[in-house]
Length: 415
Image 1 (cartoon, rainbow, N blue to C red):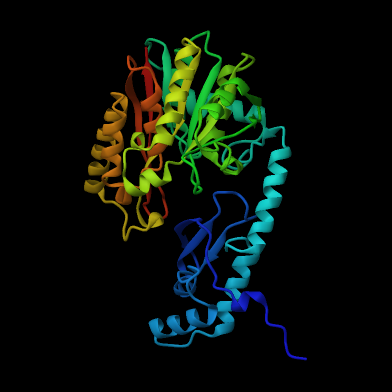
Image 2 (cartoon, rainbow, N blue to C red; image 1 turned 30 degrees about the vertical axis):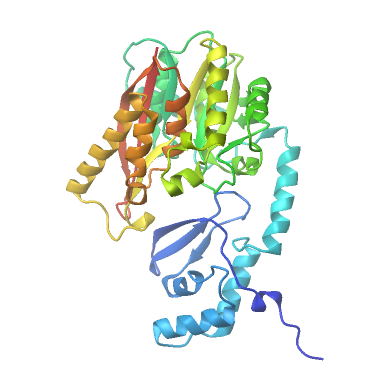
């Protein structure tokens, strides 16, 4: 009897849409890390430099045999077929390849997530303290007090906050939520939270049909508001609900909001903003009928609640440097130019000119990689026309290892 040929040998391996970053490594100098922002894979995949030419060809176009031959020609040396097959098998088992293995895991993840009463605090104990007392102390001491006493102003109706992890973005979060705490309407009881979806989405927006748990307790869902948005949508707003499973951009806002609100009765409407097609084409989202209809419904829902709604966007700005694919880190001149461009974008958002903000960021999206484009645009589009924003804080968080930068800001819209 002949040897059974594993399916992995005859398949054409295809990587799933995952996040790729380059990070320093003591053994290899630098490695490519694959991260599943959808949260299906149980861990990261680390690809040494020598194997990148192989993994880069996992596009679904070539068989393992064809990949081995192409790589051998590229490196002018040997690329054994069994090495390609082994890498493909490991990535398949690790849930980084499209195919039956991943589809089974995806079905299981969906079934498990649907049964949950609340979306778990999946980053507690990692990106921020998991113990509620320790977390409260960290927010009060390292974020709010460290940012300084916020200046007095009229009521804040909308807020842009960072979504970088709170360990690195403490001061930015302190400026955002310190200001909100000082200027929050006593009647506010509904918080629309627009977050970046770091995982690809089929639809422009993704609702979640459950509240968000935090170490302080659950931010419960505003079922009525979510139902209104669902009925008004011309697409399925829950088609990409699983993206909420591991996405941090909304979770971090829920944590700060729950701490700020304490025992106050309040609800959340968590919305991941993808706008993937519009970002790919650079087309103004309002020119897409389904997007415009959803934004109109969101705007109408806010307006009819007569000042009880606060809109929050969890959104970072630029991602530049070796970690994100640039050949070298920014020097002082480039950092200054980046701040200038970022602030130009933020000023457009603060003036509530959503179209101009979109066009300004989209113009260099491949270079600045502003991941907060969709939620900030959406916030600027739906809030009251009378509101005007103010940039409370801007910061460039610099990676100590390779000089890569993630910039972020805090904006308050008052009225």
